[in-house]
Amino acid sequence: MDLKQLSYFTAIVNEGSISAAAKKLHISQPPLSHQMKLLENELGVTLFERGLRSITLTDAGKLMYTRAKTMLDMASATKMEIDNLGSGLSGTLRIGMISSAAIGNIASKLMDFSKVYPDVRYQIYEGNTLEMLEALKMNQVDLALVRAPFSEDGFVCHKYQEEAFVAAGLPELLPEEDGLKALENVPLILYRRWESALHQMFEDAGMAFRPTCIVDNAWTCVQMARAGMGIALVPKSYAADNPDLGIRYLGEHTVKSQLMLVKRDDRYISNITKLFFEQFEV
Image (cartoon, rainbow, N blue to C red; front, side, top):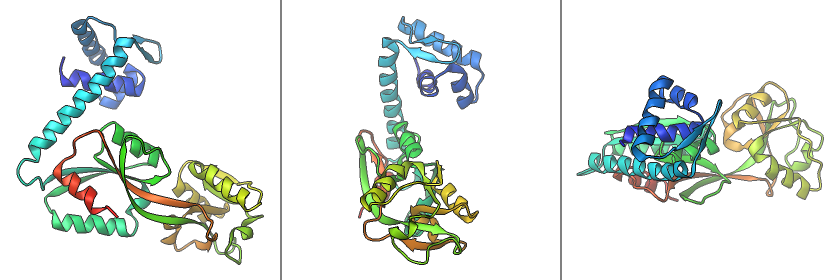
């Protein structure tokens, strides 16, 4: 049993099939299947049942998956500790980031940190909040800049900045006044993850909630609004730097979004990761 076999095994479980894992790992399927057969022979158990389109873990496979993740994390942590012997002020920092996190003060903080620690290199991975949290769980990133709400179990979170949702759209489509009531008969565009909270906001105001378009990405909301599809309900930072769009404020009871820097609470992090995490503490 070696670390490569363990990484192959966890990739198969994560991707759901040997063929999908082979594609993810950029290797052909037969060598991957061979490595799994060697691992099963060494352990003397069947780790998963092979179906036409997916695999099903046996009880031994479920236990092995848990242990494999722990061993891979320990190996990664050991390498980081060795790499960070001495000052620990160099190396690579892997940050998962939602697109809007690069706006405003966050970009400034990254620049400030880079000036103080010029030997640090960065790998930035972008995606939505759920994707970045999953990357953090899978040890693909060291830290993640994401937006609440989400389940904080298993994470340590630094709350950074809170911002209100606004109505953003082309000036000719925007209501003349601020306030939620002005949106009563306006075509609305929203990000699916916020649907429940926005629905509740309208319900609390005694208003019907009938969005025209619901999408899977907040930036898509903004692009739809730019195209004249309707009015996007998004955190202010998504629309503030877009000269095509005007903004209307929804009032003091608007939904709010919290930007957070997150790390796992169950694994070693390097000295430079600790310093970066502490810099963002508010």
